Amino acid sequence: MIKLDGILLDRLPVEGLTWYRDLISFGTPILSEYSHPKGGSFLYFWCDSNQTITRWMLARVSEATALRLRNGLIPLHLVLPKAVEDDFVYFVDCGEDAKVSVIRLLDCNAIPSAYKPKLGVFVHPQPDTEADSFVVVLDGNWEGEKLFEFEKNIRYCYSFMYSHLRHGIPDFGTLPFRGGFSGYHANNILLKEIPHKDRMWLTALHYSSPGFMRFDAVREIADSIAYLVKSVAEHKTGETEYTLLSAYIKQNQLRKLDSLESFAGINSDWIEHEGPIRSMTLDLGRQLRIVDAESLVELTNGVFKAAQLLRWFYRRIQDMAKQFKLKYVYFPPAIDQAKLLQEFNAPMLGVADDGNKLTSEDDSI
Image 1 (spheres, rainbow, N blue to C red):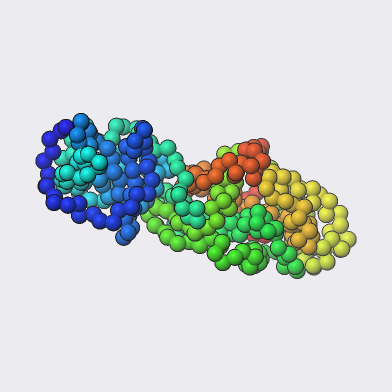
Image 2: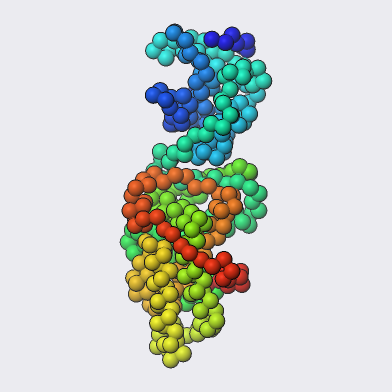
């Protein structure tokens, strides 16, 4: 055992710690995370042992730091002791039956090098244990508008995905899908079908770099959103189908067919476009795997509305995929990865032509 200086304490001044999870284990825990009733996290890190004593380092870290460590985004040596919230840590010596025998408060600069984590040790990403919590880690410099847009995008996509997976897309009646404002109304229609307890709510926002957003949500739905975002970012899933559909609508000026009869396929100007739009909408739905485009067409009272709603959903997935690819956002591991893959019927792959993209002027529905 290395001899430590520091201040001897009669008791540990930190009370109410609750075990949250073991982050690194080799038969027995090496690094564990504890939560404090007033917020924040504490890390217990094994440092040394002999025949009778086991020595642990206890350090307070911010929630954002704990999230990044937990998701494998930063190595342990950049957390202990470099990212602790205090200028000191506690060393706790435990004897038989884990009974505390000695407690020391030690300045971070006085920690022996042998008690510091080795370079390059990462925690294997683990899903949150709270089934109704979904935490997105933020990195980089976020402007307020971009932050608001991301939060809105994930909520809108959640509403769409919940409706589809849980009870089917609702009837959109005569809602005309023209202009961005109709996207707001579409989300409201979707929300009406979601029980209050199952809606996605932003419950915490740590606005910094690194930061995080915490949502209350049905975890399996939130995980499906994250899976789609990653698929679009890594494989460009659905990009070709989305681009072809959007280009067809733009080139044929279909949004100028502003009568409800035209959307329903009654107007002769619309009839020639119904077949191609239906085919391209179904192609995009198939790429997204879990989206039943056929039922979407039926419940939106027309192929054009179905196409616009699917584009509205995909565009928001695509926006989040850009931020994911730039490493501005990190999603937590899925709680039930096997079930998620079953929902999507295998990993999704997509092929797209990088030179065939629409500009931002086509951003509205």
